[in-house]
Length: 324
Image (cartoon, rainbow, N blue to C red):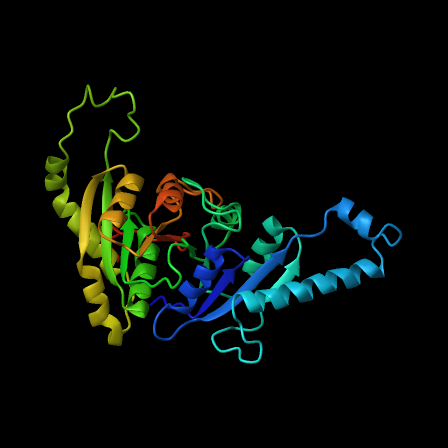
């Protein structure tokens, strides 16, 4: 059963980062250990030339960079109210490094053992409609751990209701398992959502809808038995320790089936049902590139009214194999 015991939280000095830290520290009654990471961008060449016109890359610059890291560390502790003498709730001291953010952060994420990455959806540049911060976007495309994107509309984020979106393909098993595990850890309720794609998705010129009759209710009625079988197979493939079976069974009970554009319906459903967190896979069923987010994940991450957890693919499984 998936349990978050260690969380990596990349931070700057934005409100989103402050909320991301609070989100990570509030994951259940037994809060996970947190590792803060902050990257200081290196000095531009022209700045170095002015500061060290005669030293170049000599000792003076090394000492100066050491002072920058020390000051950044002190400001980080003050900004996030970290008691350096009492490290309760933290894996260790905040990691502060100088380097190119777009490469160094990804390298650190790969070397630090964590079960989840929690970060602000936007950095110090602030929120932009229908967009993500550049750092968040890069990590979504490159890391192997689930990534939670935290919006900064509440100072102490808590998870009370989770909507987990599944497409009932093999990759849904990992997404569903992580959502159920997180729900048990936090005590949140869960609603499993499957959106049957409408053939009219993307039909902006109404070329299909004017020539094809599609009755969503009729399609759902005819597909009900198969959808039920897929949901049951999905539940069966989640390994649940015996002491947690009852809690897991309650978490798996509630489900919803809709028809339409998956991204649009997921966002709408999360808004109408006051979800605190949307959980979904990183890739669409037809997407095999590990560096390309699926359209649904990309759209939900940018437009969701709440926090979003993007789960990358793991071991390939099948929902309909006879030997399961």
